[in-house]
Length: 114
Length: 111
Image (spheres, rainbow over the protein chains, first blue to last red):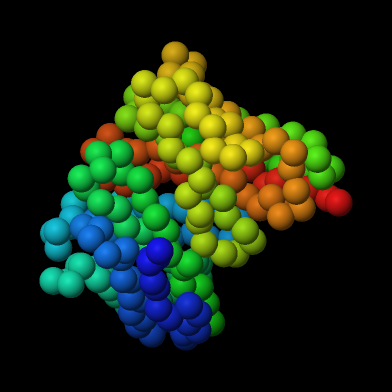
């Protein structure tokens, strides 16, 4: 079965640079979520989109923005990168019709900021 | 604020033994989900238990839910070395638009 695809899998950036992470949800899933997981930490919700509209916002810094496109893929844009942004970034998708918010996660993008 | 709190934080057992992990949460829920994460890898969805269910099984996994105590447990029976991973419980936020994860339990199964 198709899973959530994230690219790139690994990314190394310098401080103050920008980064763009991409997420391709499971086919027919209409909701996308972004999470950040620091070393040894639990995943923290950043932002979500339903049918291309932002549905909720968590602890996402103002330096970050995201959007969901007409084909349901999503991109997380990160600017003015800081050392503390080094983390695993997960995208998850779900189908709103299931009623239970069962989310399926991608393999993650490991961002390292030097 | 943290929705789920898990204990123990770390658990070491031998192959063949059972492993039990507990999770507590704070607010009312629609469902509770358990995920597994191998070191530095993605989160794998294990099982979802609805708020009107008390127990659910999936293979060697058994999940219980006690909404009166706002707690859940995950039991892995006859553990294997391949079960070594971190296990997280997660509940939906009030809007039902995101998951809030517990701190996780790191399970080590030695052969």
